[in-house]
Length: 116
Length: 225
Image (tube, each protein chain N blue to C red):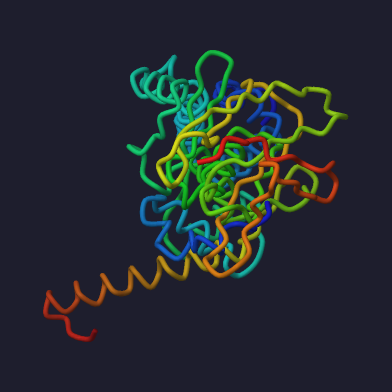
């Protein structure tokens, strides 16, 4: 989907992932190093987050992210649909991670763990 | 694991999804289920996950028949009288389905393109949304809806009027279309030209847009603010 029309409004400058749910953030993080299909996403997320996403949750999040233009599906390989993060998605993920980092720093400081 | 009870359970769970979803994801969903189960994931976990996903999908496409009748009625009712759905979060797509119709409304002019794209993608419609320069008064409103003649379904998309970004009436803030619409369409959304730049305000009240693959589109909102 064309990204035309987004830039004039700066629509993705805010943290659009704030309410998107953890599964969306995990999927974007997984796709950040290259396209993957559904099963590869589930394995990768289990690997780096220690969390087993249900396949129904996965598809719900994929549809939602695709609807927001944060990921796009690539031509199907056999029965599998690989997905790729879009430039808008990468930007949204970066904003979200920055936001998490700020919260993390404050939390650590207030817990007396040091380091902002 | 063909023919086993757990395979049948998974197939039943997948049949709970709308047909449009099954056409898009069905084959891969079965394969993923088989791979997960062969990896040792309990079949019940897979079945429950698909059932929850199907329920969510149904809630999105047919809220008026499920747990959110009030929300569905509000969305549809508000759209019919042309009221913008400002109750929704600005990043949330405004979507509702009642009976056989899906209503996509712009609730935030600043996020109009994203909102419409999100709704159309969510329902797997083959509808493109394109932002094009417009007079400032049309910023974030629908300028034109075009259906290629070859799709032969002109007139199926109903434009819904609402206030412009300035608050004045006369803009198009949403479209309603059949739930099972399978044709293509192009929706043009305006983004206002900044001060100092020439605004495309035509003398005859109609704007022309050229989009590759489409005939010249007319800006149908002719009412001046």
